[in-house]
Image (cartoon, rainbow, N blue to C red):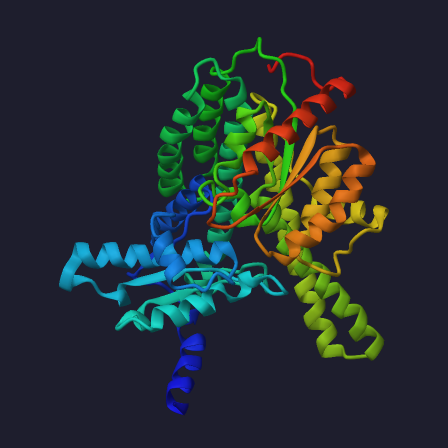
Length: 454
């Protein structure tokens, strides 16, 4: 028994981490469809065999090998990797070799259960014969999700930059869809445009990312935005704008949130959802903030070596954040020439907003920081309602709900909590209808955006 336990713990250290994939296929779980496919395309441009996993087709497997106490996205991604293995082994037969794959599953620090996904999934995979050879590639929020170790050192910086650009473009494709779909001339035309555009955008990244030809990539984005603008019926008045915050996977994964955005749109909404880039910038910001906090402490204690290390980390994280925010601004400005997409929140501004209200603190660096501050900014920005999306029993999500409800009641902005697991809640549709009625009343009372949509 002791030997078995030692082997299990050894697997958690030896078979999870940053591995150079070499000729192995890197299996990327889908969160938002465009994001996963564009990241995989960047990988392929740099010689890494990126492959996106089919999603939500293995939920029966995900539930079979979890107890129900895990975070809902853990069940979804568990099912995705087990379904892939099942399908791939049936397809390849004796040629199937788990050693030919690296399953990509990042993690985070803090109280969020996301930090334990890859550990739990490692334990499950190790229970199957031969799957201990399928390694789990992981990056963590420590070091700002650095990709060091996944590629040759001289290429990592360029890979990081192009990965971030792919995140920005994926966010914009999502926001383009949500901005256009409520006002389209022909129902389904916006969805069709995105469906055919994601492969084109992925091809642009695969062809040009390694050469750092961002102009060629962004020209492809320009063309897609131009096509989207042509789909709009300018006679349709602006609808109530609804902001969505919450747990990053669930708010973006349409199967897991039971197509929440489409349901809100069905009842008259125009939706803006917190972006993936916001989370990436937040991780960078917290890294810089934490390093500065340690630096101040070590200055008081006179620890010179620690001071130098903290200062270096703070400067590195600060420069990375500065680059990302500058790149984000540039890309959005380019899009604004054709389409008025919502601007992303600046993380330092969100911290200041929390400090002004004194309702929460970035010292508790969970996703609740982003969600609570994001809710406040949506309310201040004239939105007609806010939805907080989170997995059932999610601690940051419930913390957000406890703080946001009285804030929104005080401001008079309609607010809805949307907790999800694999079950279908019979009252969800009624709650959305009621919420959207309140949002429409809010829009009328505030006189918000009565102008046509374009």
